[in-house]
Length: 451
Image (cartoon, rainbow, N blue to C red; front, side, top):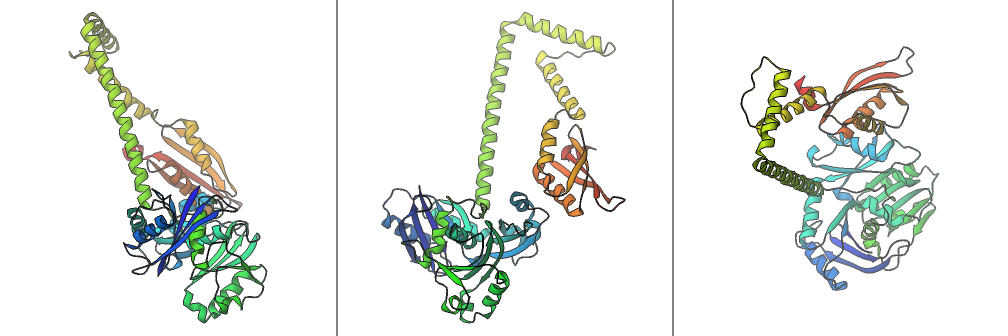
């Protein structure tokens, strides 16, 4: 398998093409182009694509993973009421809104996996949605298919995977200075500093001392400035792979992303362009299904018309049967004259209305309960009672703290989607004060508006 990693920096674009999987992938090519403007202009990806094709003559380049540099990203540490990475991703955006120097609608973010020592504390890495999308569009216009977008933090974890012990402090210059406290495959803390601060490293060294606490070994990867390399006691350098220079370190890590999805918890910055493509594909599937249903309906109508044309006697008997059943059910009501097809459509509509009133058009009870169970957060929380009536489900339970109740409500809202409204009807402490009792109502939004 051949992969491309592309690193964006303020003055250059770097690319590494790898052949084969870890632990010993072969470096096929490592190229760079100077940026015409900071972090690359529209023509720079075209120049990089030409360099790649010159190094490896192929008809089509393989998919690429782009990594965004620290100056284009923001870091925030968030303590969440869940420890599961998937659930944390679903609710962490609320912690970032209003806390970043970009509009809330522009926030594109993801979480690095938490360390075992603090499983509910996550590091969020965010960037501007429009910036990421413009970058992706520029490379795709140059003929480079973009499969994934990560940041230098994740690329650094990929590059150092398997080279540091379970708990360590990792320092890198990419060329900005990154400090990462890693433990058990997770990240406990991250700091990033502009490269110019290495000339007066007091602030960086203070962060190193604070993050390491003198208890974990320190490792460096890439070319650290001498002011840092000589000031951190016991610093062990990680040798770079053969054929990779320090300037290509981030691109090398990005090229490893398809092989090491667990090294950074599957971390990626998913662009809204990809989400839109998914919506287009979903819409296309809906249109295909609708077309198939329309064809089936047309065939059914054609078969019915053919039957009517060839079996006039059967149609007359069917019409008489409908009138007889109606007269028996409502002897005082006169049945108006109508075709059998019209009456059949009216009966179908009546059945649908009845199903909606009775709630029998709702998902099966087992499906509702299964979804509610899967949304339970980790922690001391339990469900005492769950009742289902049509498309409405009432959940009664107890939790150790109010935060778990809100986490469960948010998880239910995410699991059931926009078609359902999830409301916390009641939440109160028990008489002993050891638990919080709660009642959550899950109901279809259509039913809610009708009531």
